[in-house]
Image (cartoon, rainbow, N blue to C red; front, side, top):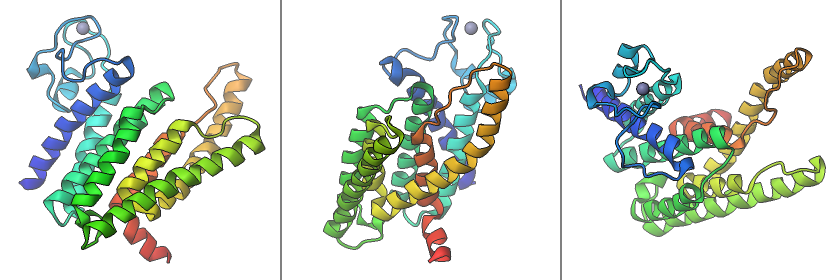
Length: 262
Ligand SMILES: [Zn+2]
């Protein structure tokens, strides 16, 4: 019963994350106005129920028949599933709230980066401060007893995370003669470090690189084929989503994976 409740909350938060992903790059308010269709019609609440409405409408808007991107559905489902997993892995309410909040922030950052190739300071630098505060007041999040030890983990994570990527960026620029890692990624790793410490940061970077290599190999083939047929496909994989997948994996199963490997 409780799981169903958490799933519904997750789907509702996911619906809100969709609004953030859509409106933050346009610098619009994330609270007002209420949801509108592309045609300008207001969407009544009963057509705006997370997951359910998209399925019932089969991805077509009621007002004008235009497509509602499947991504809205995917983000809602993904958030709901993450909430359930974090809930079952958390040993306290505060850890559940911090864990699901952190995952939500990362999802918004990843999808905005996919859309715009940009990471907004409000979320990355803002996230660093939230990470510090959370670590100071909830040492249980870092499996620590004392507030100071927990805060130190967070601070060292933020410094190491952004510092390490800063050097990777500099070396990358020397080797590839172009910007390999953006400034936004450096700040994002600060956020990740502030929440999950230096171990989490390393895990996110290495895990992220592994994942992006696995994705790039088949993509290279697709690029070759597309070039032969004169299609143009963007060649760059945004780094933020890769880091986000690495970080969320660490939040959920990082300790188990490290125990297996070490
Ligand atoms: Zn419409």
